[in-house]
Length: 513
Image (cartoon, rainbow, N blue to C red; front, side):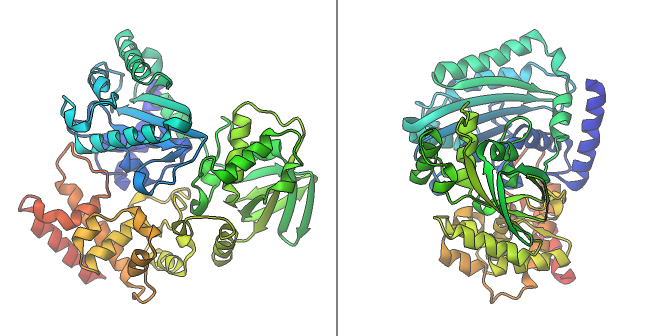
């Protein structure tokens, strides 16, 4: 079976290499694919996956180093919305090898590094081993998160994963022994952590890959009020919980519109929600809660159930996650309480964006979370579509539709290109981070309605062409945690033969556009 599954993996990689996802190098395509599958439940974007890739020289045997706080990736600690209580810290240490078996050598390297990398009492500058900047930066994030969250940490998990094209039923004893050493080191250095090691082979990768993201779901209800294709439902908490979790009882994070998907942890509002859920003597839940807002493409009511197509939960994420956590903690709702659910059926992008902005302005939501509904963002999406490019103003919107990564453009990606090519500030572009979206002045300086709309596809095409050229000169075995196009404004630091090729490419694109 594993041999056949390995053939299937090879077919998937053929497509990934052709799409340059993330490059045309087979080992890197396998690595990225493995990250995607292993972290599937976190619903990470392309940029978030690349941010966790630390593969390369001096990587300490670690190819992927991911930190999740309450299920969301920690990439920029200074702009991250930190939960006040009820915190869960999850670390993924992933080793990927495009091998037909699970070999001992990669784990030898990993185990040798873990003893000091996981000893957070040692400062980065005092480590004895040679480690890359990317690895040290992520280690510093872990140390920061661990200190910050430790007073209110409910759960701390360290997950090791070794992915290959091999058969997990044929893992050698010496390899298993090394995996156990890794777990022992983690348990020794973090006394309260839940450490485990998983071998992910071809069969497991294919199985995860085949899990379909379901946007067509059925929701039972107790009572309903409707007007045309607008519905207000009263549904049991348990039924709503089953609606938002998959067959593995994992929250379907892909159902949450990217605008409001960041769970704030148990802040004051969410503490009140949890207290209500825990109190069996409290009034019915829907009396005290504003409820959930769902956008759908179509709805059909049959008896006491509604079938929804194209489900997106655009408001009530805090309530949804609180309910999911209540049941995942093993609680039962013996009082048969209910939650209010508002369903609006519309395929009009303008109407959907207006609903998202209106419903989320009723509670405290970061301004950056609402920018995806701005007119300029919709205009950029429309004009890029005319050029065959897909603008991810909402995270993973086009990814979930199966569009190739080579045609995807994110707001941060095109903003950096605009700062470099139009505002002519390459140094600022190279340092651009997502937090600039949170500052109204910097956001408006880039995404201005005064900018000719046809400038955006030109910027995007230059960036895409630059990516392709830089990929041809990137030294084998080197990786970057940023989009490859970020190197476009640093090409003068590359070997001399790169400059003419890159300049020629940019001139060619300018002529085309």
